[in-house]
Length: 359
Image 1 (spheres, rainbow, N blue to C red):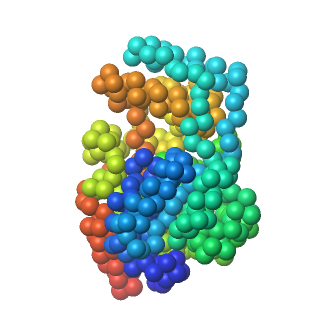
Image 2 (image 1 turned 180 degrees about the vertical axis):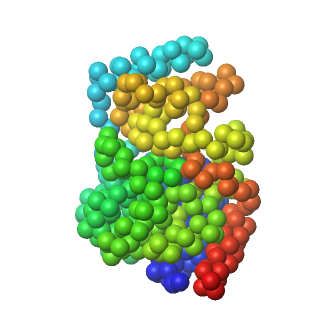
């Protein structure tokens, strides 16, 4: 089963190590690319100066193609009444740990669509691949990257979003199913989540668009890769599978949660960041974001509050407010280094395909 993406980028395997802000590292991205997959660097939480350093570090570790990922969300909109209601809702939790929420809440991550310094950095130092989450930058920006020879991927959680991506002239669609860990890539973060599963979404997009499709969400082993490809995926993107690798920046508490029974229970919530995101269930999801709670501040202003609460609680020895992002298939996670994991995935995938062909 030939892969368009693997052929174009010179990959040995149709596997993309997902960009995960705060967790994926230059060492992980480089190791994935050196092992024949496509490594990814998450730069959505970085400014241009930080991105320059991370790009340089990654390039010092690999000469292979790698992907850089950005958040292309609508910039945050302050709403005094909603922001005050959210601050009031959080106050008892800050009181519990003897702290105070610092106001006003800040837009801690600048959207790529307004970050001209970041855009210029990437035009000056074009990577092999750029991917976008939460939406797309202006057509002129996409056109500039295409003229620079960059392969562009963009996330879609619905067929409608996939059609927008295709119309924008992007090279491949990342079909993010509801199973996936981390932030949902929905274009309208305040809208309803259609919660389409990975395999249904992949099949629809593969049948009704002309672009290569990358399956993302709930894929943890070679059998999952084979299943996704049988449904029309050109490649797969895997994030949770890499959280326990040696190159991962996951904290000891994060790693412990992933190997405990807690990993069996994940939820999607807007209460942590202001946008829907899936992670291991915690007090923010179960209490702060419970039914009937007020609407959180806009993304990423709500994330400022969530990070403040986690920092305060962790200083007091509690990690009940940490954002341990993980997908629904987290119990299938394995500990290894990145290269070893990719080798195992490739072997499992080859065996699965051989089994299907011989059946």
